[in-house]
Amino acid sequence: MRKHLWIFMTLMFVLVLAACSGGDSDSSTETGEENTDENTTEGSDEGSASGEQEITVTAKSEIPSMDPSLITDSVGFQWAGETYEGLYRLDENSQLTDGMAESSEVSEDGLTWTFKLRDAEWSNGDPVTAHDFVYAWRRAVDPEVGSEYGPYFLGGIIKNAAEISNGEAELEDLGATAVDDKTLKVELEKPVPYFKSMTVFITFMPLNQSYVEEQGENFATEAEYTISNGPFEMTEWNHGEGWTIEKSDSYWDAETVQLETINSKVIKEVSTGVNLYESGEIDQTELNAEFVDQYRTNEAFNVAEKPYLYFFKFNQEANEALANVDARKAISYAIDRQGLVDVILNDGSVPAEGYVPSNFVSMPDSDEDFRDAQGPLVESNVEKAKEHWQKALEALGTDSVTIELLGDDTGTSKNVLAYYKNQLEENLEGLTIKLMEVPFKERVRRDNASEFEMEAATWGPDYVDPNTYLNMYLTGGQNNNMNYSNEEYDALINKANGEYAQDPEKRFEAFLEAEKMLLEEDAAVAPMYQDAKAQLFRPTIKGVFTTATGPEFEFKWAHVEE
Image 1 (cartoon, one colour):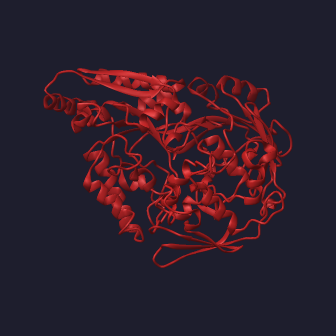
Image 2 (spheres, one colour):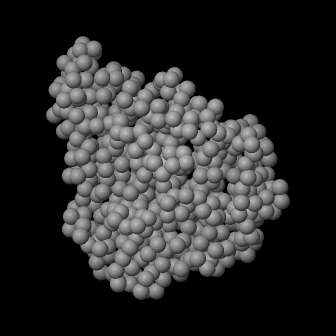
Image 3 (cartoon, rainbow, N blue to C red):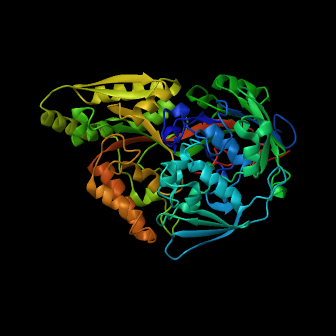
C-alpha cells in the first residue's frame, strides 16, 4: 500500500500517500493503543471537548478526495472508511466482522466467491445492491478514471482486471457480476487466500452509480456531493481547516453507533495540538519526542502501534558497494536500533526483528504471531558489522566507500537520518554517508524510478497476510525497484501464492523460509524499526481502536462516557 503511504502523513498522525511505501517516522500512519485492553482507549471522568456523544480529533492535512476510487492517502482512508462500508469491516482484533455481506461461499477450486448482501440503504435512501459493487470495481480499473489503487489491487486478482486497466478488455469483462440485487459473484484469476481481507480496503467500497454520475466532476469534492452507506456521513467540509461527520440514521447497524458527531481539525504543529488539548478544545492529538516524557504518566497518554516498517533499501545497481552482501550485512549490524527508538524517536516505536512486523498476522489455526514463529532475523552488533565490513572492503579492493542515503527532509526524519549517518560512519571505518534529504513526493518519485543508492524507506500492509510484505521483492516486481533478484526467493513466493494457495501450513512455511532468505542470507533490505505514535486521547472516550489495515481509528463502536 501503501507504498507511498508510508509516509504518508497520517490522519491523526500523518498523511501517507499511497501504495504502501513511506517516509519518516513523523509522516507515518495508522495507530493502535498501548496499555489498554484490546487496543481500545480507556479513561477518566472528564467529558469530551465538544459535548455529549460529540468529539473533536486532529488531522495533519486536508482530505485530497473522498472518492474511494481515487483515494491514496491515510486521511482519505480514515474518513471514507467511516462513511463507506464494504463487504466487511475489521473489529478490534483486526478480524473480519459484519459489513454489507451477510454470508459468503467460495468454490472448491478457490476461484469463485459468492457474497449474499444484507438489506442496507445509502444515505439518499437508495438500496445498496450488488450492482453498486460491480460499478465501483469496474470504475476502479477503468483507464479513463485514472485510479492508482484499482489496477494495483484488482489486477492479477479479479479476472480480467489487468487487461481492462491496460485497455485490452472491456469493463463488462471484469470478473464481478450482480447475479441479482443481493448476490455478488466474483471470479478470480487464481486462488487468493487473503481475498476477503482485501475487500476491507477502500478501493473495494461500493458506489451508487446514479448518484456518482449525477454529481459528475463534483462527486466527493464537497460534503454536499458525498454519499454514505457506512456508520457516518459527511455534513461539513471546510477545506484546509477541517470537517464534520455525523451518525447516519440510514446505516443498517445504526443502533450500534453511539457517537452523534465527530469533528476533525487540521492541526499541523504538535505544540498547537497539545495546547488545544490542554484548553479542552480537542480530544486527541499526537505527541513527538519533545512532549512524550512530559505526558507519559498522564492518564490520557497512550501509544498507538501499527505494523508499519521502516527499513533501508539497497539499490544493488546504483553503487558497487551495495552489490556486496557483506557490505549490506555490515550496514544492518552497525545501527543501534534500541538507541534509535529510545532516544531519537521516543514515541513507542520498537526495534524491528524481521520484515514482517510483529502483532500483524498469526500462523494458520494458531494464536502464535508470525514474528514469534520465525524469531529475530536482524540484530545490532558492532563486532559483526566490522567483520563483514572488512570482508566487503577486501572484496572491493578499497579502503573507503561513499554511499548516498536518500530520505525525507522534514521533522523527525532529519534527526533519524543524522543518527544513521553517525552510527554508520562511526562503526564502519572508511565509510562516508552522503545524506540526500528531499521532499516526500520527490523521494517517492526517486524510489519509483530507482534513482537512489540507499533509501530510508517505509512499508505498510494492504491486507492481513505476509504476502503484502514479502511479494515486494519478486524479480521484476512492481515494487522491486532496487534490482534485487533471487530465483529461490521467487520460487518460494510463487509457491505460496500458487501451489500452496489452499494449503495454509505449507504456504506459511514458504513465507518463513523466504523471509529468512531475504534477510539472513541476502541482506537485501535492512529493517530498522516498527512504527508507533504517542498521543493524548481524552480518557472518557471509549471503544476507539485501530486495525492492521483499516482506518487509523475506528469510531463505529466508540462513545463518550460521562
